[in-house]
Image (tube, rainbow, N blue to C red):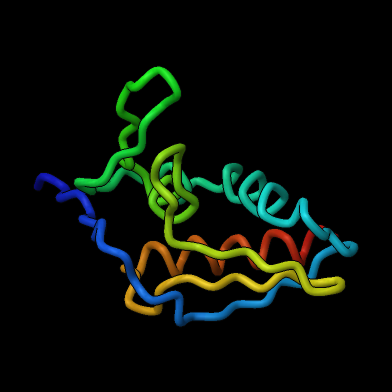
Length: 118
């Protein structure tokens, strides 16, 4: 049986889901980089998806939004669907509540990874 790819919307969506993640220390302006680098280590980040959106490199080449991680965190020219807000010794993640299940699973896995490896 052939596995069908998950299709993610390329429309702007409300960032109406909030998850807070305890971090080892206050991250300040480095919060988004820290969160994305941790997410990149997770298998779900690279889960292939179908999405009509794309970004664009400095030299004008299209960048495919073809993984869960790229859809959530964005690529140059495509903003993504997450906002990372540092708050003392935690980080607040805002992302669409209407996201497909795989996105919620990635965020949940990210939270667990960061909070258990402090």
